[in-house]
Every structure is written in C-alpha cells, then in structure tokens.
Amino acid sequence: MYLAYLDPGTGSALAAAVVAGFAGAMVTVKVWWRRIWDKVRRRPAETPAASDQEN
Amino acid sequence: MSVAQTGGDAPGTPEVEVGKLAELVPEPASFRDPDNQVGYDAHGQVLRVLRGAAVEDWRALAGATFFADLVADGRICRTEPVDPDPDAAGELTLRHERIPFISYPYEWTFAMLRDAALLHLDLLLAALPEGFTTKDGSAYNLQWRGAAPTFIDIGSFTRQREGEPWAGYRQFCQTMLYPLLLTAHLDVPFQPWLRAQVDGIESGQIRPLFRGRHRWRAGVLRHLHLHDAMQRRYASTSVGEVKEQMKAAGYSTELVIATVRGLRKLVRKLDWRPPKTHWAEYRQTCSYSERDREAKLAFVEAALGQAAAGGGELGLVLDLGANDGAFSRLAARQARQVVAVEGDHAVTDALYRSLREAPDGPDRRVLPLVMDLANPSPGNGWRGVERASFARRADADVVLALALVHHLAIGRNVPLPEVIDNLAELGRWLVVEFVEPEDPMARRLLANKPPGMFGDYRREVFEKLLAERFTIVRREELPSQTRTLYVGAPRG
Image (cartoon, rainbow over all chains, first blue to last red; front, top):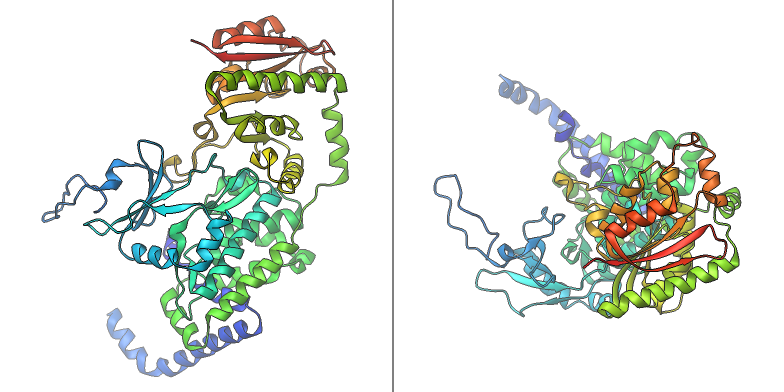
C-alpha cells in the first residue's frame, strides 16, 4: 500500500504547465532549476541535522 | 446548519444541529466535499446544500456573466437558490433542474464523450477570464438532456487563484482524454476501462499501448508519456510546495487558458469511425422486409398512444436493442425522454451523430447509450452505489423490446422467464416482439447452438409467460408470419 502515500497530483500540476506551450515549459524549467539549486545549496548544511533526527 | 449526526462517541463532541440535509435522501455520489452535498427531497427535487466557502463561491458565481449565459443556453443545468440568503447556520440550499435519465461515461459513445469533453473545456474557457475555474475535470460532472450534454456540478466552480494550474487536468485526462485517445488512435473501446475504474484510466495503465509509432499520434507524447513520467518523478513531492515554486516562476492564469485551449484543439482533432466492413456485417443482421417494418412502426405508435391514454404524456420510454433508433424517434413524439440502448458501439455512435444534428424537436429528446443488455451496467464505486446500476436507474413508463428477446434467449442462453422478468422490472408497459424459431434471423442464432437446446423457445410458452406478468392488450402478427408483436399493460 506504499503507493497510497504517493500523490500523482504534483507531477500533473507541472505537466499542466508544460502542455501550455513554450511559456509553460519555461515555467517548468525554472522550477526544475530552482529545485536543483536548492538541493545543491542545502546539502552541506543539512546532512548533520538529518543524521541527528534519524537517531 | 450542519450535516446531521446522531451524537458522537468522542468525549466532548458538541451537539450538531440537525438541518435540511437530514431531511434529504442523499445522492450516493455526493460525499467527497462536505461543504457541497446533493440530495433529493420528498417531492423528488434535486437540492444542493452549501456551507462555508462554498456559499461565497456560489454568490460570486451567481453574479458572473459567463454563468448566466451558459445556464441560459442549457450548457449548465438550471440552478436557483431556494432562499436568497443562508439560514441561521450559514447554509444555503440550491435547487437544480432534474436530469431526465442519469447516464455514465462508460455508457456513452465516442462522439458523446468527445462532445462532453469539449463542453467541459468550453466552460473553462468562458470561466477563466472572469476569474473562475473548476476544482475537478471529471466526465461524471456532465449529463445529458436527450442528445445535448449539460454540466451538472455547480459546486465544482471556484475562484481561480493566480499562479495555480488547473486542478482538474489529471482527472480530465483520466476520465475523458485517455479514453478518447484509446479509441481514436488504437480503435480500442474505452467503455470497459471506464466501467472497471470509476476514477478513469491511469496514465501508467495505457502508456505501454502507445509505444513505437503510436507515441507520435496527436496528444500522446505530451499528455500521456510526459504526464506519466512527471507523475512518477514528483510522486513524493508536496503539491503545495510545487505550486508555490510554479507561482514564483511566473505561472499565470494566461498559461492555464493556454493549457485548456491546447486541450480543446487536441480533442477537436480526435475522431473515430468504425471500419467499413462493420457496416456490411451489421446490415446482414437487421434485414427484414419493408412491409414488416411499416407494420411494426404503426403497431408501436398505436401502443405508445394506448400507454399514454392511461396516464397522460409519457415520461420515460426505454428502447432496448434500439438499432438505428427508428422506434426511439417514433417514441420521442409521445414521450418527454427516450433512452435508446444498443450494444453495438458503431451503430449507437452513428445514431448520436445524427441526433445531435437534428433540429429542435422530438429527436433531440433521444439519449443513445451503448450497453450489452445481457451484461448491463452494475452498481459501481464506493459501496457499489456511487454509480447506480442500470436497473436502479431504469423506471420507464414503457419498455420497447423489439427484435431483442431471441438475442437474449437464444444468443445468450438466458432462460425465457428470466428475459420477461427483466423486462417487467425495467418499466410498466411493455411492447415486445417474439421471433419464431423458423424466422431466418432466429435460425442463424440457433445454427450455432446444439440441436434441441431451446425446446421451450416457442410462441405458446412466450405468451403464457408474458400473460403471467402483464395483461396482453394487443397482439399482431407481422406480414412475414414469423414475428409477432405484443403490448403488455401493467396488471391490476
């Protein structure tokens, strides 16, 4: 039942933007870029905190 | 006023006031939105009880120009507030027009689902510039007045928030676009898929069917492959988080309109026509003489007049095994609504296409549905009642069963008493045709069965069974002498 915890609506929201044409696709590209950038920036600072929480 | 509750087990649960909703018979499909629930009162009126934000949404909607225009031309069902203001508990009750016969997308033909999808998109294109959208995109939000679709879920309209994508996109794909792609591009009937899954077809389920050259067919790459890939990629990401990021990246209502326009262009392009060989085969199955046909039309017309004479205008006539709809059109001259049920998708689709082009008049009161009468729609969805079975929805004044009984009794091995019981359950009056075993069409069916298997399939047996359930008020043998028509009136 792990699939019940996954929400396909998030991908659908982004897909709805992509199908809006070039401007919509650009929005999706910006979101992707933003998410990658956030991960890169967050990683060094967050790793110890995440380990603490797991313990 | 709130939803009626009969006390709570949890300590400190406050007493909840019993309100109007408690007096209604709830619509089994209306349970997902607690602020927006539909039920039926003792007079059979369709009422919708709104509370909370739904009341504000309705007030804004009632003042919108697009809404008034679409209600006026029938594309949205007629709706009015029972009282102008909410009651002391803040609830507002709306009254809807009653749809003559509720049907479901798995009973519609390709062209019907396509027209329903176009109507949904047209509503959105009218609503978005005025700051409204729909919360969902379900095919079940559409119903039919004869051969014309209408949008029934007023509660689906809400204010469009700037920067948010259309929340109904996925549901639209699952219940309308994917079924259309399946039939238009692959010639695979969508009805069994929709009947099996009330939430529609998931992208992952049909993606493997659209590999190779089919990947490049209209709408497939974007709305199916890309959509499915993105659903998988972001399945564990919060939708709220992504929406905020989209807003920050410049997503706007103009882009929502562009999405809907693109979908509309795609749906208009999709079409399905059966192979020509289908029509050649079909003509061989409905060949009877012109004299028989004329006699049959005259008999059915007189029978309907006889049924109407008992109780005034006929409400619902069911034409079971409707073929090209000739008898449905005839019945529509005397009835408010005719439902033409036919098992052949291509024939039903052709009937729908011809009815939708008909000028205003009786023909527009015919609703064609595609269904195998030996396997009619069951109860579906939550607790098996969210989508009612065909038998539960069928409460006809007159049932027409012309050239049908031999298909069920011989073709599908249904015992004759069961066939007549079933017809009696669906309506009050019955106009039925018995085809003798010697008839060329019955002989064709019998040729595929072991000899002697249908010893009871005889006119005397049929008449006896019919007389046990109806009063036979009319009987006529057709000129071919292998077919007899009967009118059964309700007993007592």
